[in-house]
Image (cartoon, rainbow, N blue to C red):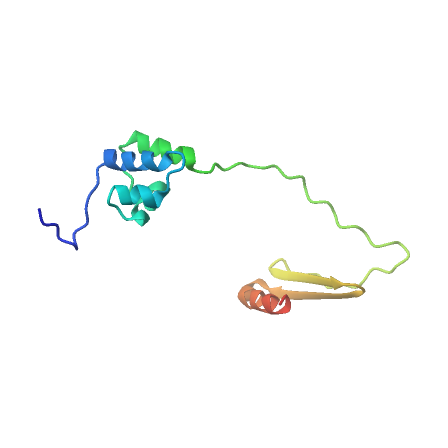
Length: 134
């Protein structure tokens, strides 16, 4: 039987489940399993990630669901207020920052620098910050 090299092969859900089960065996590598089934290992990787797998196969979906990481919601405590300045030192005069601005503060020893960028120029801010942090 001649197969047109430009024509894609179609694999049944049972075949995909068999390949994925072989990948799930302890010590099995995806490349070795793909080679044994005469498949490209990239295709098997796609099947493992859930792309190209038929939803009709319950074994395939169960295997993928077991290996997929689960989202875990964490509750975080509310942020603590910043420490206040000592009462003997005068408070520095800081202009109010607009809600749509990016504010960066750098401190190195006694030197402190505060930079404010508009959110509309966030890409420029990121480029500048990369240069500063080099």
